[in-house]
Image 1 (cartoon, rainbow, N blue to C red):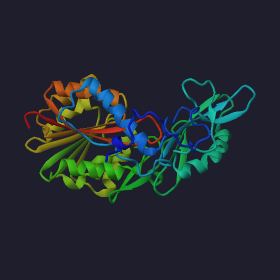
Image 2: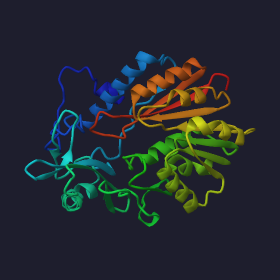
Image 3: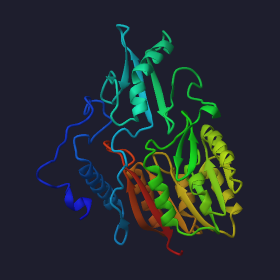
Image 4: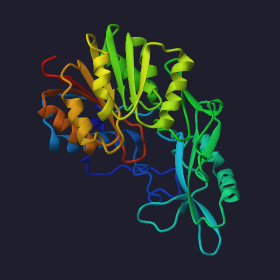
Length: 358
């Protein structure tokens, strides 16, 4: 029996559990700590389908159940916090919801990695020691990786820059992927092997294909799937991410992976020309706002792509962009949601598109 059948969103009696966090409902971060995890997954799929059905015809499209996170709690490898000095001179550390003038103080966080949660009192002490007298607030970033090291930044220029020796890393399907304080990287490390394995399975044999990792970041997909392809082309705009991506490629000695620095809008045509005569398979993983109109127009016109995968943390912008792809002749083949963000309202969704002429 599917999760949806067991935990109908419309069931009359709401099941409730005790939240782990004492400020649940106040800090603004979590939404579902009071629900059993299977019910949370069912609710998220129902919400996703509600958004998609409003914009898209899902007839014939395979829609998977939401893939559960291996760790429903204690999974986030990054927290963004506010250090706030009030008029009395007291300084508080915590989250600052949009509706709240002050911060919601925390001493621990139920969805952050244990290493980060345990470090928060020390983070407050170090933050206060570095906070300039003329600063009322500072936005801090604290992060960790597989080895449990914790680092933070946010006070002072380039305070989030790390040297290569200090990069964080996580092991995904036998490959060590490095990232930094100032680079984008997925917040839930535990679920990444499932995502890479799903992509590997959906793509199928591709030894003769060129793989395009668009909005490549530090190279999670380029590095993680590099063994499948004869050639890989990455495109990334952020200079910080490009620096770490280069380190990842050098670390793994990936001579068949090319990194192009620049915007998708400005570089993708050149990348396509470089891969002329080969099968083309790609993935786009844009920011939460989705594709710009220019990038969307460029990508949806690429009829020579055999497969295109779209990974998004925002169902609304994803549905908007997919609608435009479908209008241009692309076909939605499969939707695979992943619970990257347990206990919150957010959901990551992977969509497989094929062109009608493929």
